[in-house]
Length: 510
Figure 1 (spheres, rainbow, N blue to C red):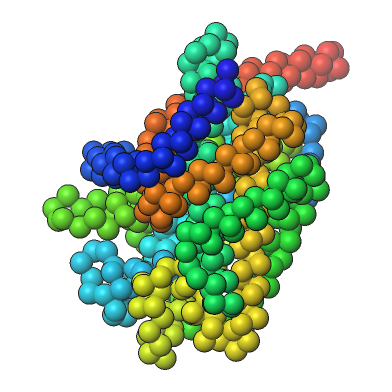
Figure 2 (tube, rainbow, N blue to C red; figure 1 turned 180 degrees about the vertical axis):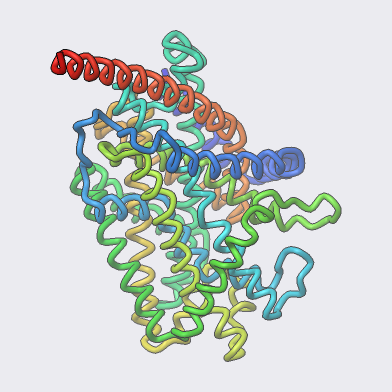
């Protein structure tokens, strides 16, 4: 039932977008504007709560609990684990926005700062860290932790609904309410991933334009999506340990290679200064940025950037969380949160410092108008910047290849997760189900691109994420109840053990 209802809903959406793209775009924009206006405060409060909750779990009294039995060992090495986390969680987005976002904020910064100034550059880097740092990884951490705990510690199915056992019981989980939760998770995942696939197609087209002069057009983007769909379907049919694991490790190696190249041939000292200064500014202002709206001005900057990102991460949460849970068995809660929340955030900080810092250095110090060029075509920002470095054409080719592999990895992981969610938590979903979801993901991406381009992709993320944000809040309280009960049982067992030990000592003394 979950599979068929989700499938019918998504097919109806695809048909609507294909037959009436203009009407779908207009209605989506109305819903988008209403959501931002009325519920922007909720997105900010919820994301800040998720971040605090993740740190409490990691460094509180529950940190030693294992995601599995007490004897379970991690299934994957740290390198493979980090590779899959990083590639699945943010791959395409980091490459797409690594240069483009800091340059965009530099020209149109928030907080009433004049654009095109050194202060605008500092704020641009700080908000890039903010949008790609601890907050998004906190939401992945929470969803993945709840799923892994119930799946491996409690022996329940790998479904979003299974995390609600402490609140609604077995009848609720297996009834209409539980099925509705799983359906909503599938729909949010499908649209969230389609957004990233659309961004990936735009960026690949931008890379091919920079290297071969291929026009940036919807027609070419459709062909790019079709070709990459074939690649990721081949990967997904090869299984988790072969396809996704190998591609993720390759991704991490290539991303590291490209980043080191830009770091060494670019303004190395300037980039280190940028990283150091921005981390300090980020830590100092994180609370203010987390809860900042603009009720006394007409600016829509927060809605176009921060709220879009928060909605995007929430829409991605069921997909990334389910996948992270699947590869995290055997780790303690403290180890899990440290690995999922802190390490990827630090890698993201370094990435933005290297690529965004290089673009800003060209703009500020060398007076190369990369920001203006990027504003005209956001997909060109990375390649314009690489083009002004030594061996820029080679670097652009490597970046394009990296985007393609990130595209394949994200879509591969998503088809795997959608298969799990729609086959009652099956950890190894059937090939036919994965093929179905793979084709549908790509079709949604095409429809969104045709109906609204980048704006259409952003709108879809906002609309589908709001109800799922409420579900994640419920997951937090359900998980906390479980952990409290387990801690209580642990303390009871510990008291019994000590009592028996004291009795044995007393007998021995006698």
